[in-house]
Image 1 (cartoon, rainbow, N blue to C red):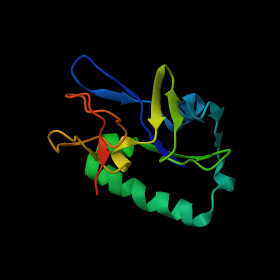
Image 2: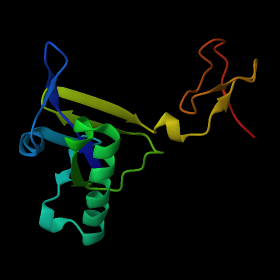
Image 3: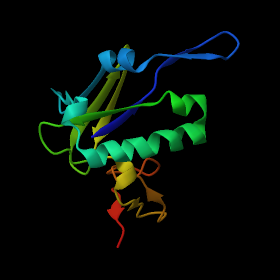
Length: 139
């Protein structure tokens, strides 16, 4: 799993001081279903993945400027395959920042339809947030 991380402090006039790669690496943790994923060392990364990252870094820096230039790529090896379509939990921790993502990812699921209005809603939802009726799969 590739994780792109960035950490910095915004000054009083909007300038950003970014943390370096080693600082981020020492604070970054990723868990899948409460199991810590192993951060791969450089010698554990295959050449194709290294080439991909080498190509991506300047593109991101070109698109996002200094912010993109300070984005760091890290590779983690999960203990089990991560299935974003099944129920689970993916947690990212960087210093005091923690983000927990409940799986499945609603953005990847097919939308469901409200039986009353035919309006489409998040595929992760079971009930219409407006009418309370059970959402149905699109056909």
